[in-house]
Image (cartoon, rainbow over all chains, first blue to last red; front, side, top):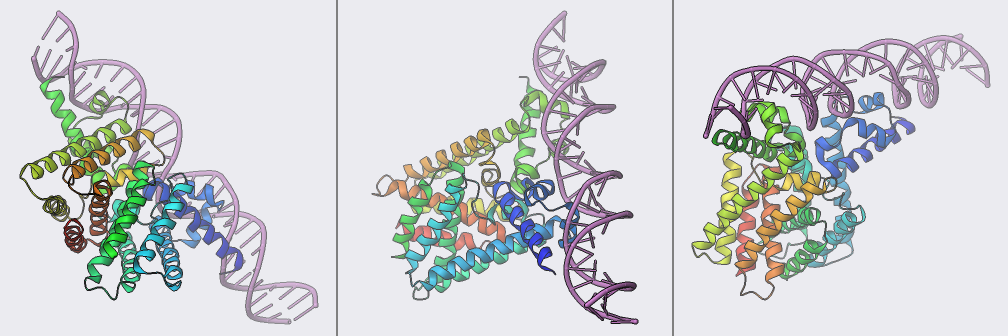
Length: 185
Length: 185
DNA sequence: AAAAATATGTAGACCGATCTATTTAGGAGT
DNA sequence: ACTCCTAAATAGATCGGTCTACATATTTTT
């Protein structure tokens, strides 16, 4: 794949992620993806010959890796488990508010919409959540109930992001952050 | 509104809720709503003259009240806060698994899809979540940080339902239920 | 190094299906 | 009798997807 081709492919994934975060799988029409990315229709099916499911699936996985990398950064800075979880939550909250309550979790909407109907997309969401959970788990090695805690903290983060988007307010994020600190103390 | 009319209206809302839970706002096409409910197209726009947004909005609110009523039942049985939260979580989990991972939270998917783009639907979701939060808050009056806890427990429930659907597994529900008990001890 | 050949990527017209919504007419319920 | 409600045809927009012609790189051959 040449330089130009890779750029187009990236722009398509960027646009898809943007639209998927704002409106989910069905909210991201391919016409909009094309309009936002500036790429022509033909390029879309050249780079993603299996169509929309492939495009959205790769977008979800790529976003998952990006968040995972951000988690690694935080972990490398030597934060405690509580600081770590609060840091993840604050970053995602900033992003949500700055985007006008459009960009929440890049996985959640697709998971809720498609888990029951598309095996391929369910698998993509499943894998991303599993990797995030493992990253959290790695910060909790000293805890007896580390597995429970990792799942729970992830659920708290996802739930807080959902409520913040629904209320269009940071309040749920701040309240949940405090309770995560309590739980991990 | 006559007897027959009310029945048709209810069937339309039932079908809408069913389809919205499985696939969200965009996943619930009006053609499917008509097919599942058995009601003709004309009846849909007779009962919901403002179209799809009104239909989905009323469906979300109705589902919110149903869950709220179930919460009242549990509360009336004199359960502790932890038992209460666990009961809500178990009921929703049963429903999710029995439906083949289709029926999760009847509000979450719409909230994530539409909060950024539809004021009317954002408001509907906002109000339902606020009422659930109040019901939880009422069970936590003795706690110092009752407001934080109510939001947090709701976030944990919503997050657990999301992860359970994404993984197609009860495991997140069980793990989070244990941690709710810890948090509320 | 120039030219020909091949691979890579772009551009957009076009397709059938499906979407939400409107309209008009008449049947059913009370 | 008269309102309430149903029934289906239809509209126009948009959906995801296909196709063909063309442009641009990249390699191969001379």
